[in-house]
Image (cartoon, rainbow, N blue to C red; front, side, top):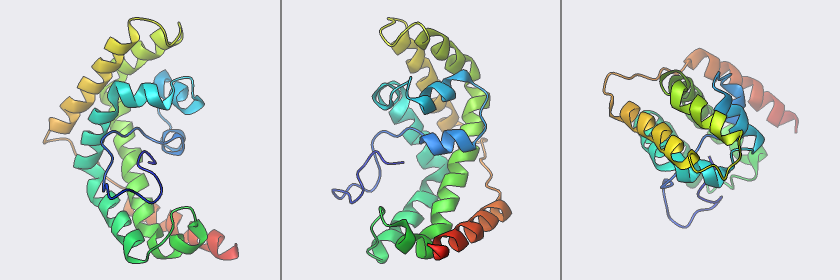
Length: 176
């Protein structure tokens, strides 16, 4: 979720955040918006400006503990995020939990915010210069903010799937 740099200037969490391309692709989402984001047609700056703060608030509420756990592991081991073969055996569990949570959260966003996401996707297909796009992305952000405020919303992580993925990935990393 690299909006803050790999070895960061002391900032524990970013002020704005958008899902990574990998998270979007793994989540099997239905709105056309996500395909545009993953392909780069909806650029990272556009997404960050449009709903980055709201997604960060939503992510922090539901997945922030996993992110902090991963950051703590990386800091404790003084591990470089760019050297996955070194950090994954130690911090892979927290990394996979964070990403599994992000995937589950994206599925919830895709479901609850589908109308504004699809409307923004339709407008973006006319071009990033379309004057309607900022308002439509604002509507996406508003939907995410409503989700962040919804105390009844629960994002569940499939712990068994996370364990399985982590074990497989650790085996691959060990092979080098």
